[in-house]
Length: 300
Image 1: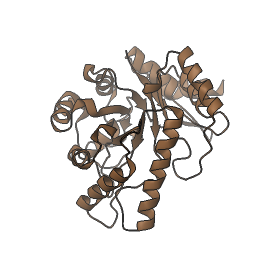
Image 2: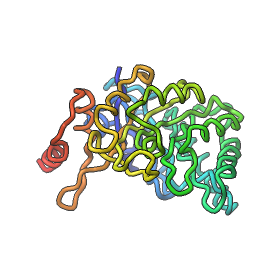
Image 3: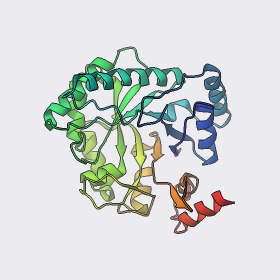
Image 4: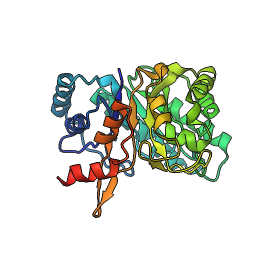
């Protein structure tokens, strides 16, 4: 069965209930959300009653909790320990995000490993290892999915060998997985038109069983550009057919695929394209009128 969804919102008023409703409106059976704004530390208290209501709504719509993903905020940077207080903040905030995910019953948390600004790559990778060894507890139910990055600036994990080294250094390896991002992989230099060859390499180095989710995004930039600019499905340099091949790859059949593509702009407003992109994906047919369809749908 195809597991497809997108990024959805999580508000203090409706919390997970609102997230589920939004996902359903897109025709999704999986989704991802932040438990608060990705750029700051402001977080609402997890409401038990809303969580129960959300779980009932999931059940009624045949969406499994195991296919829902939480994304850790961008402000967490485990790769840089130049300022001790910032490094400790990142570690402690990640611990809190794991607790919040556990309260919601979510089993996977995607994490950008971080940037080694004013340090070196090896030090950055070791910082991630040390931080994860402080964060991860043997009895936690949440698995941290390290995201493949584009290699912009001083990012770590633009090479799957980096992720391999981190997993090797982590004490509780069963608590660490990987989130593949197609835009990031393309921009890092991996050919998404030869995805099976990439999976062969990944399987040999890390193991396909470690893939926890896939962020499906087209890219505005050519391969190996190290830019990290997402594009709508079929409108970028990866292309519709290559992305469809990735989404329907048999080896990733049980892995949730999540869209993080750009909103469509119109009259100083922006609208989510996910309902129409998911429709494209389910039909395996490119929609050349995506932008107009999105604008007309939300205006009417």
